[in-house]
Image 1 (cartoon, rainbow, N blue to C red):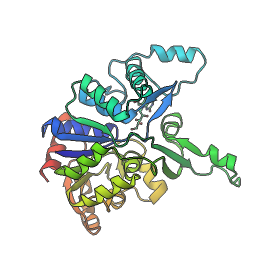
Image 2 (cartoon, protein in one colour):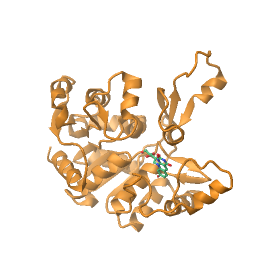
Image 3 (cartoon, protein in one colour):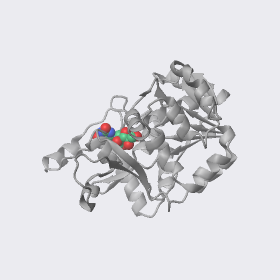
Image 4 (cartoon, rainbow, N blue to C red):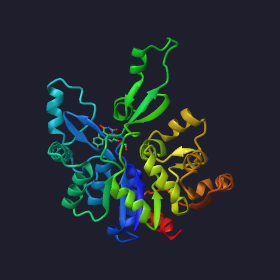
Length: 318
Ligand code: FO1
């Protein structure tokens, strides 16, 4: 059995690649929920949905999120009624949020609902949120003026993940990131079991701070991962100092002043025994090995399904 820690798009592609290399039922996908939010009273779990839609063959490869062949009639009506509707929810996607919210209100846990959704889409991979507790990624923006910070000012600088990512198009200089609720959150017992008993732990080429960070903020998960360090392999989401997707490059620059794969390796150092860098970054191998990590080189860009499968196959063989 293989456990994969994953976020949205990069994580989904990597898991889809893995399903071409090992039996899908032998994969446990531990997925980020730090991006979850509530819109119009509905619980939206972007990363869980991206993984599910990709594995179900329902993903929208134009937007990278949501469902293919989508329409937006419900949202057009919301806009007509005067709401800014900055978070684009498609009609088919709304069906998932309606179902999830109804089941959560009935008292079901998020992991239970996620399994129901997977089953309905005939997904054999065990897709699980890392916790059924609420963990929310919060972004503290840097001061935009010389004004002495006040409490009110501080509140204005604090953004929920989706406010930062979608409403402000991740154009906010980050001062720090924190994971609200992580200190009280209970690690999903099935995730703990998977981490303890699997043959290998893989960390997908997802954003380390936004997608994997919320998981690492759970003390029990951190502890289990440290115990499995020798069997844990992470794939770099950075190639030649540039993020494959999303704001990672800006975040690494804001927080660490270095956007190379080395800063990602340093972040994963306590948990990861083997770090995979792209062939274009082979010059970094020595620097990463000096961190007491094995460093291997592959083509990491998942440009199509063949490339996804090739990368996943190479990682599984390690
Ligand atoms: N990303 C956007 O950039 N704009 C959107 O309007 C948007 C809507 C959306 C709706 C449902 C969903 O599951 C994801 C959505 N995303 C949207 C993606 C999402 O904000 C991020 O990609 C993930 O949270 C990061 O992994």
